[in-house]
Image (cartoon, rainbow, N blue to C red; front, side, top):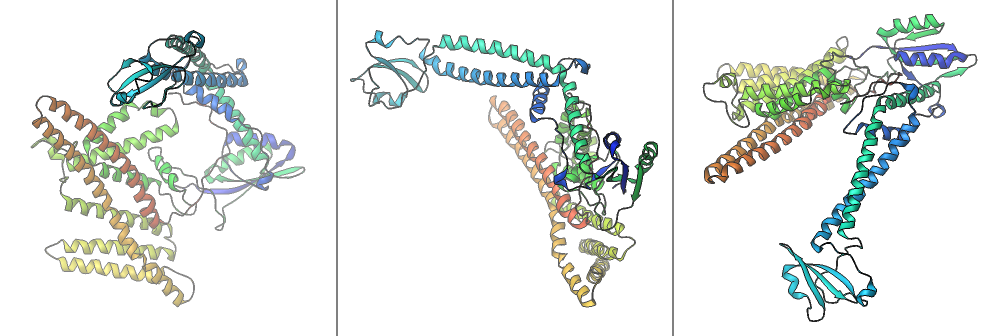
Amino acid sequence: MIVSLVKVTVYGQLKDKRQILASLQAMGLLHLIPLSPMEETLHEIGPSSEAREALSFLLSCPVRRRQATNPDEFDAALVEGEALDLKYRIQTLTDERDFLIGRIMDLRPWGNFVFPPVEELAGHRLWFYVVPHHRVKEIPVEDITMEVVHRDNRFSYVVVFSKKEPEGMPVLRVHTGAQSISRLEQRLEDVELELEDLQAGRTSLTRYCTLLNESLARLEDQAALGDAAGRTYDDSPVFALQAWCPKKKMAELQAYADETGLVLDHADPDPEEVPPTLFQNPSSLAVGEDLVSFYQTPSYWHWDPSCFVFVSFTIFFGMIMADAGYGLLMALGLAGFWKRLGHSETARRLRTLFTAITGGTLVYGVLIGSYFGMEPPRHSMLESLQVVDMLDYSLLMRISLLIGAGHLILANCAVVWRWRRSMKAVAPLGWILIFSGALIAWLGYSLSEGAAVVKHIGFGCMVLGGGLVLFFSELEGSPLKRFLMGLERLTKLSGAFGDTLSYLRLFALGLASASLAISFNDIARQLHADVPGFGLLLSLLVLLIGHGLNLVIAISSGFIHGLRLNFIEFFNWSGCGEGYAFKAFRRKEKSLWIT
C-alpha cells in the first residue's frame, strides 16, 4: 500500500541547524522539500569517482582477506591510491602479457632465431611471408633466394634473403619484430611473476574493503547534509525546514522536537499538491514495488498496484515458460545461488521474485503435463496431476482470454474502489460490465443449452455498461459536452478488444516453447535411431543445446511479455497515475555485501 504522508515544517535556531540536520538524517524519516532555489543549494564534497573505482576494484578480487575493523589504523586516501596504482599496473602488465602471448604464437612457426647485424649479411635482409599453399607456385623462385621453414595445414612460411623487399610476391610480408622467441618467453615469465606479486598486493588490500566502504558512506552522508543545509530557509536567528513525513512516524518526530525545543507544524497534503510515493508491503510481496517502479512510480493520490503486478507477473511467467522440466532447472539454479541472494535487502527481494516465478513455472508445467516437452508416463502420479493437455489449443486460448479479461476487470475494480465515495466510480464500473458482459456472451456461444439466455444476459451487461460509460465519463460541463465526451470514451471499445486479445500471447509463447521442446526431442530421437553408435552423442548434444537455447528464449519472453501485459494493458486501465519516489533524508547503510 501507499503510506499516508503529512507535510511538516520544522523551525529551529540557526546556530543549531547543522546539529539538528544531522539528527534528522540519523532518524531517516523525512523527504525534504526545497525552500531555497535549487541552484543556490550548497553541496559539500562527496566521495570521488576514484574512491568508488578503488572500492570496486578491491571488491572484484577473487580472494579476500579478513576484514580490518580498527578505523584508527586506516588511511582511506592511502588505500585508495595504492589500489588505483595496482589497478593501473595490473592492467598495463595484463595488456603486455596478452601481446607477448600473441607474438610468441605468431613467431613459433618461424623458430627461435636472432637477427644478425646487417653488416654480417653484406647488406642483405630477411623477409618473411605466410603464403597459402595454393599460391606458393606464384612465388618468382628464379629471381630470389628463399627457404620454406615451416608448413601447416593451410600455409607455407617462407623466408626470402634479399637486399630489398622482393617484388612479385603473392602476399604482403609479415612483421616478426626484432625480439626472438626465447627473449619474449623470458619477458612473459617476468610479467607473469610481477602480475602474481601485484595480485598478492591487491589481495592484501582487500582487508580494508569494509572500512573503505564506511569511509565512502561518511562522505556521502556529509554531502547529503550539505545539500539539506541548502534546502532550508534561513532568516537569522531561525531557520525553517519543510519535508514530507509518514503519518505513522509523526509521534517519533514530535518527541524529538519536544526534546530539542524545535517548533513543529504539520498538515495533511492539499489535493492540489503532489506528495512523493512511499510503499509499505509485507516482505514477501515487497518485490512487486521494484517491478512497478521499473516502469513508473504510481501517483500518491492513486493506489498501489505492486501486489497485483507481482502475483499476475508470476502467473504470466509460468504460462509462458509452460514446462515443469524448465522450472526444475530454474529451481536448481536458484538453490545454487540461494545464499548469495541473502546478503542484502535488494538481493533478498530478487530471491523472492525468482522463487515465485520458479514456483509458478513448476505449478503450471505440472498442470499442463509438460516435462521438457514430454508428457508424463501413463497412469503415473504426474499424469493424475495434469489438468489440461498442453496440446489442447482451443482450451488454452480460452484460458488466456479469460485471464486477460479478468486482469482488466481487476484493474477497473481498483479504480472503482479508489473512487468508491464519488460518482467517478460509475464509468469504470461500466467498463467492468462491458468486459464481464463480453465474457458471459462468449460463454453463451459455447453452450448447447440455455445459450440464448446467457447471451442475452451478456449483451445486456454490455449495453448497461456502455450507457454508464457514455453518461458518466464526464461529470462536469453541459449535457452536450458530457455526452460528447462519453462518446469519445466509448471509442476505447476497440482498444478494450485489442487489449484482451493481447493476452493470447500467453498461449502463443507457451505453445512456441512447448513446440520447440518437442521438436528438439524428435530430432534427438531420430538421430539416435538413424546414426548407430555416434548417434547417441549427437542426440545428447541436440538435447543439451536445443533445450538450453529454448530455456533462455523462454525466460527472456517470460520477463519481457509478462511485464508488458502489466505495464501496458493493466496500467492502461488501472488509472495508477505517475508520481515520484519518496527519498528519505537518511544516512547510508554501513554494511557491505560480501559474497
